[in-house]
Amino acid sequence: MILIFFILFLAGSFVASEKFKFDNYTLYKILPKDSSDFVILQELYEIDRRFDFWDDPIPTAEYLIPPHDKIDLENILIQNNVAFIPTIQNIQEAIDRQTVKKYTRNNVRSMQWDAYYELEEIYAWIDDLAKTYPDIVTTEVAGTSYEGREIKGLKISHGPGRRIVFIESGIHAREWITPATVCYITAQLLTSNDPETRAAARDFDWYIFPVTNPDGYVWTHTDFRLWRKNRKPVGTEFGIDLNRNWNSNWLVKGSSTNPSSNNYAGLGPFSEPETRTLSTYITAIGNKIDIYLSMHSSGQLLLVPFGNTTQPLANYYDVVNIGRRAMGALSVRYGTEYTTGNVAEAIYHATGSSADWVKEFLDVPLVYIYELRDRGTFGHLLPPDQILPTSEETMDSIIDLIHQAKRFGYMNSGNGLKFSFLTPLLLFVVKSVV
Ligand SMILES: [Zn+2]
Image (cartoon, rainbow, N blue to C red; front, side, top):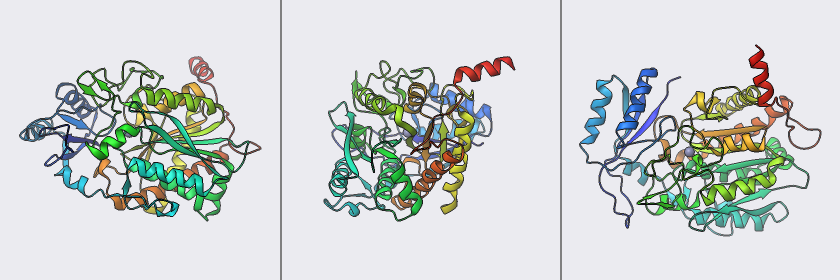
């Protein structure tokens, strides 16, 4: 597999009191051809922190540097024979093309799929859904952010006794396509006439949280479009990577102890109010969750736990096979290709994620991380005209995921799935005997 990394070239200076402009920042697609290229990129990260790696394989760093360093980057890559393509010459132009729309209140169908929405618009829409479908939709608050905002979402339920599909999105603030897609999925579950979608909506309780990092998301709209972390001050720096802060192999791999890093894991597991409150909320319903989806972008990947090892732990083979088939369903509509695999084998070792914690501590049968569109062109700055196709194909895959889960024997006699996999312990015993 060819790994593709984005590098954001940071130049200029940032005055915190004004909205940061990314004029003449350039986005590069890097095409490492083998492991030695990968090592060069790793070293580049370790010793030269002027570049912001957009994809997970390599931890990110943000440093503000003068424009001539763009030449430095190209020279380093050329000297090391690493292929690269500048994909966006001027980041600010791509940001300016990302329309942000206002949601017209009191009309649940007025949320459109050709623009991104601010936090208060998404929250207002959720409140309106609860009013419009009072027997089916309830507003849920899964936690609180550092700046005191609610982590607001909703529950769709057609009656008691159902197992749960849990969708967590927007934990990385700049990945705007994830809340947009999750809102579309919510709307489909409530309004679609497609029999399979209606059955999926009825057969499960759906817990959906479009923005689990509300402070960061607001910051991406008001001040700094490419912000990833939460907004807690740490000395002179800001923010903890909330998807490195969960209490599962915390700080073991793919995380940083440096608060200026985009992968800064915090002072300890669950040090952040967002992860602490959200994990408490999830724990309370944990034994009912059959499917947990953690939505990210970009790279077109479907990843399964765990992020610290390539060992096929737990029900790995089932999860990967179900995932691959669901990605086949995803590709039907627009031909979009996803790669499915374990986090550590598909991208890079990374621990302390929500997905690993949900798998390790709650034993949820099917846990997936989606890295949505695209693969190597716009990254986090996906143009609004890709919101609808991204959402449609993702919805297709989730419906097929449920279908495949049933085929693989994860179906209970009642509603929902059955938890039925070899424990990690048993798997280890088998392997050691062999
Ligand atoms: Zn992410």
